Image 1 (cartoon, rainbow, N blue to C red):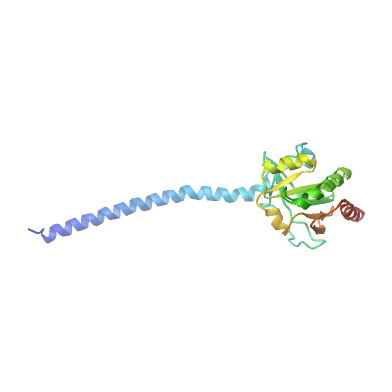
Image 2 (image 1 turned 90 degrees about the vertical axis):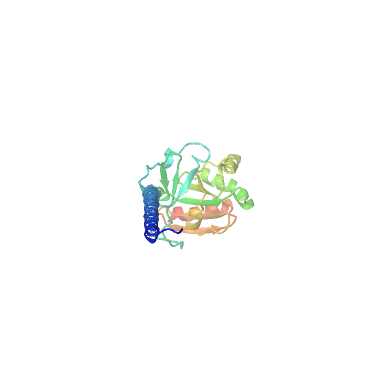
Length: 222
C-alpha cells in the first residue's frame, strides 16, 4: 500500500532541510577558503610594491667577483617617470637585486655615464663585441657598464662571463622586463646614458670599440 500524503510531505520537508544544511556547510567551507586565499593574494601584491623599500647597495658594495653577484632585474615598485626612449628623455629606471635582497637601481648611478648592454650567450654578435665592451669598461674608471642578459640561466651565463672576464655587473633579465622597458627587439643592443640620467643614444646591433669610445667621449664632454 502506498504511503499517506502527510507522511510523504513530512519526508519531503525533512529532505529539503537536509539539503539546505548541506548547502550551508558547503557555503561555509567556501567562505573559509576565500578568507585563507585573500591574505596570500594581498601578500603577492605587496611584494612588488615593497621593492622600493628594499635595502639598497652601492656599486662599491657589490660582490667583487665576476658578474658582481649576478643580480636579478626588477622593475616593480620603482619610479618609471618619463617613459620615452628619445634622446634627452629620462632613462627608464630598473633595479639589480642581489640574493640577499639588497637593490642597486639605475637611478642610484646618476653622476656617472652608464652603458646598458643587452646580450645573450647564444648571440654570435654579442660574443663578437663583448671583448671590446670589457676593454672599454676596464679602461674608463668613471663609466658604469651594466651587462643585461636576456632570459637565460646561470648555467650558461656564468661560463660565458668567466670566458670573457666580465668585470662589470651582470643583470639577469629573466622576465624580459628591462628589455621591454627599453623596447629591445633584437640582440645585441646598447644604450648610452648621460650622467644626468637621460638617454644619449640607443645602438641596435653589433658595436665596436671605436664607436663605444666616440659615444662615451661625447657624453663626457657634455
